[in-house]
Image (cartoon, rainbow over all chains, first blue to last red; front, top):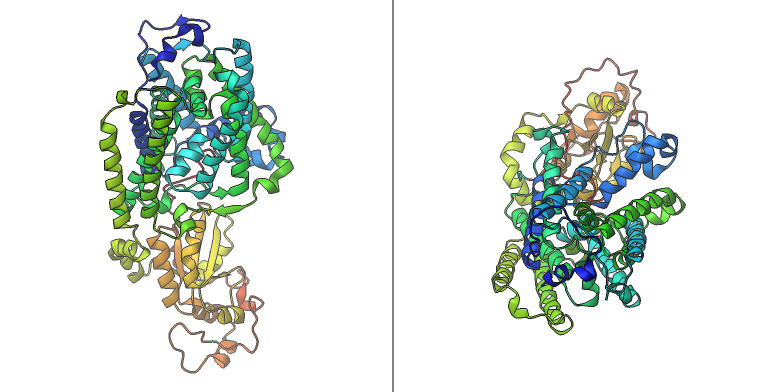
Length: 191
Length: 411
């Protein structure tokens, strides 16, 4: 189903550096992946009481850097103070370790499945530098929005969705609504 | 008491617990990678109805996890009170979600998937991660300008079953059916717009769908355990605590707790409103026993060093509330020994209570008559700890460390 994008290097690959001699395996079926993800999500709740998260860990890394560079500023900003005020260590939080795990797990799986490849995935009509700029801008929007919504797709949509939080379900429709509303206007970037 | 979630900080230690979180994160990252979520083209295709992998993976994960969470809760294995539920801040959630939608379609990732993309050397993923760090930084620097908005429309721990007034099992069943309908619709879109051959999809998905429907129907029929059922499961163990009086604290201990800077003491006065207005302890909160169930979610969000002290005129009403809170696994709950009557006996001047004590007190009645309703303006509402410094008491309060959720998924 998704293999064709990988086997079409003229579209999706800019610099082809294969870091392993492994042959790229196709991605697994979406329902299989969903079941596995559901089991991981359940295991997280069942063992620890906490769900999954990604942007929270990234947030704490940023706050940790701010606390190292400008501690006086952190101590005057209530939002940052909550995580790094006084002797608090912003990295002393479960969500940071989940975030580190996500990077490690992605890398391990990418290596094992032969998908560690330096490339830029983009629509056929988008120059590579534009794709990078768009990724950066999109990331900035995503980061800002995720903090405003108190969670990203992992921490709000998946975790809150499975625990039936009203706010998370409304949030989920807002994310898809925002993306679908804009999709038509940026169709040239992807198609 | 339901054994899960585990008190992992107690078992593995403060640092040791992070190994478990690291393993959870590794599994999470690996699953995202094998699903193809490191590839922005697959993620973006969702929004042009060509490839609905995102919808299928997300909603399969949500219904599988929800069915497992509520099946184990219904069976009494998992304590849902200790499971983190994202608090609802309705409008900031919607606005943040819309902004994220823009970021998703422009950038092609969400934060978790971009980490996986960057970890597998996708350069667009790397630029997205850098952008996300910048966005997160900007939020931290600007939230001060709209702080009241960011905290607005707060509805606390608010779940769909409360919104619709039905049992959680019914919602789980409905969510499963809704997701299966979405999968069917999504596959039709993939066939029509994405020109996919649905015959290539695995046949077992029908079996899996049937299994989810059956299990969620079972959860619906079983229902979630009520407070009374939860109490029944733990009653032998907890009745013993009541019987050997290890949770009833003396008035002198409560007075010392109130002056302990390391603790947050939440005094809950569960008497009638008129008794409360007549006399109550300074900072005691009035709450009728029938309103307790609505407060439980909030009690679970109090800091770790919170001690709850329940008081009635004697002990009967307070003990009932103690049982409710204990069954709902609120930590560190104690009863004021002998209630308000005993408090007044201890701290009111002797001549006053002798002259005003009612002739024949029945159980859980205020045995002191006050000429006017003084509320907390009575001298005994906040006794001077210096005056009573030599009052002796058996210290019973022991803080138990919290188990279960410690904060938001992206907190």
